[in-house]
Length: 167
Image 1 (cartoon, one colour):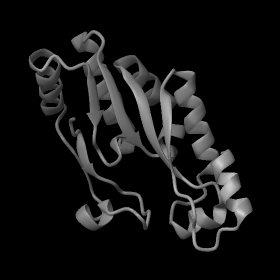
Image 2 (spheres, rainbow, N blue to C red):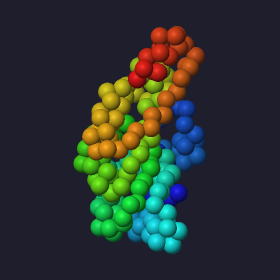
Image 3 (cartoon, rainbow, N blue to C red):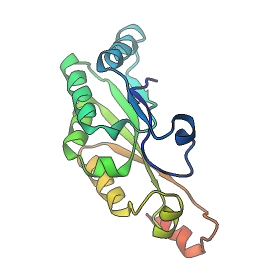
């Protein structure tokens, strides 16, 4: 497990991160991240790394630079799992491609719900189309998506729950 940053600038009202850090995003220096990866790869002989950032992709250019540095290192068989938001992933195909080239195999996307009413209540915004696009981009680059979904909002009816399930 490594961290490349802390915090998230999103406004989701169900997440504890904004209470811990406010709406700040604090990235770590790339050199520090590479040192952590080197330790895991060379000293621990581990080939799977979970990046525990709250939302690693908030700075797409930084992610691209990190991925390029990982690729330049020439690690063999190194795989990453990460958490990310749908908006950023859906708007940055170059970043998604670099992530795949660097060994990112699985992305946990905070989709939460497909009901516009529920997304508004959770302060996620209308991200249904962004969620679809993020999933499509990840799949285009052979990145597996794990969807974070919230079921059972207070005003949900059976149809709302089924729509979420079918998505």
